[in-house]
Amino acid sequence: MKIAETLQTLASVLGSDLGLLVVLVLSVLAIAAPFVDRYLIRTKRLSYRVLYNSKLGVSPDLDDGDVAAGVPPGADEAMHELADEMSRMTSVVVRLRNAGIDDIRRDDLRNHPLTLDFGGRVIWNARISDPSVEAHRGAHKRSLTFLPPDGEVRERKESESAKLEDVRKTSRRRFPWSRRVAEPVAEPESETPQWTRLQLRGLELQRKEKLKIAIVLREPPGSTEHTKKISIQGQLTGGRIVDEREQAGVTWPRAAVMVGILLVGVLLATLLANASRPAADPAVACGDGELAVVGSSAFVPAAENIARAYATACPGADITTRSTGSNAGVRELLSDAVEPGSTVALSDGLARHESDRLDAHPLAVIVYTLVVHESVGVDELTTQQVRGIYSGRYDDWNQLRPGPSSPIRIVGRGGESGSRTTFEQRVLGRSEGPLTSDTCDDADRVEQADVVRCERGSERMVLDEVARTRGAIGYVDVPSANDARSEGRDLGVVELDGDYPDPGNIPDGYPFWTIEYLYTKGEPDSSPLQSGFLEYLRSGTARDELHSAGYVPCMRKDSRLHALCRW
Image (cartoon, rainbow, N blue to C red; front, top):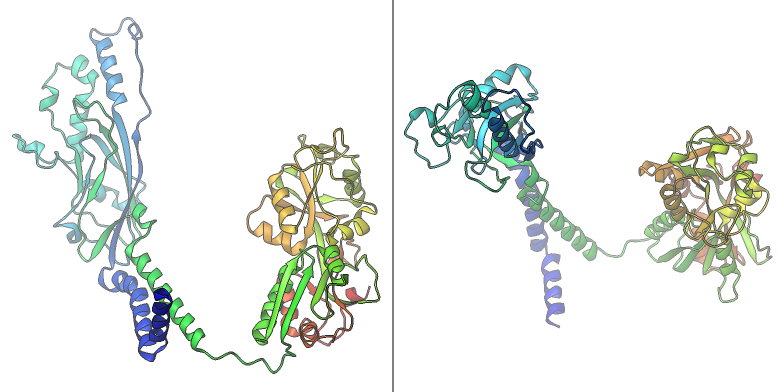
């Protein structure tokens, strides 16, 4: 009870002029704040991303005797030390990018330079890689400064910081070959400078300029565990330093925008709730009540969009859609339990059930296509080849095209489908055949079957199965096939007898098409809602929706039937 009262109070507050103003101001502030911060206040942005942080992948495993005979004295021991060194080496690649709208100047990082700390790992080498402005490579290289561990005080001044040349010279002295073979040990490892931090002093980047820094590291002396720790610190005057990986998650700018969008949604919902019930469009023949649209799974989505537009124009209309299959929809309409004017049925082609109680109203030309799994490698078939596939004369695609073996798998529709009826009548000239498979992978229902044929209950399910099953073939209407391909499905559309599946090729002989009919029970004007919706289906709004969905409307602008709808 308290929750209901609270919600009611909140609704009343939001419904007031002051409440709406507060929500509007908060929405604007929340959405605008990240943009103001980025484009007016902190216009500079240095982004970084750790692209690689792992061992080198070179870990020689030497046993005694692996070193070739005849090498200089001490080389075998140096080889073992080299193997140990390589097993402790890691590589790190960090990408830097100017992601702001202004250039980053030398002074912008002077007080708090960008510093990379590698968790105690010792820097052996570094280089600038893939600079987007090649002329700046030298300047970027000179900006590299190497520091000892944070807080460590060194006695030798030159070890406190160093440039890249110093690091590389020291690294050469670290190798076993250098220490044991080429020259005597100059100093113990503990006295060799240890640089564990990399700092970019005086870094400059133009807008959108980027570069990569590749660093070779070695685990610190005495360490027994491999570390991947990296910390990157710094402060950019007039801007921000951001980790691109963190930017991929929920950040405060994104959170602010989401809050703003949420508030806008609250504002719109409040306005809609406060608005009076919209008046019916006087240009539309509106009817009140409920109407069910059942039938063709291929055509129901387009009919649903048209029904939604009609309900918007006519607030008293409640139209629902159900995908049952063409034949099942017509049977439901014929049922004695269905009152005239309460239900209409969509059928791909003329209904199988002839009845003087039904009236057929042509809506659109619906063109079908054969679809195959992309691996099949076939984009054209003849009618005779299709019939051979469904009869079992062809059971492998290499019988129809050169190439590797790929067993044929047929994905069909059930007996309630108008698409199947059209396919059998206009392409096969016979029944599609028995159901031999549930999985579509093999004949798990009928042993020693001539064909592997499964069934799926809708256009979408056929497309899903064909895209999943190698060697599969099926059929759907062209708009559904185009939608699936635009989504990146592994599907190919097949020409039939040299004609591409298109309404323009029907007069030239493309066979796989039919008319979509809307069936009514009794007189079309048996209810104001049914007659008004039927009239709306012939309107310009409905024609535009059918065109957008990929169909050819039967009703032309001049109120005459399209030539194909009179066949």
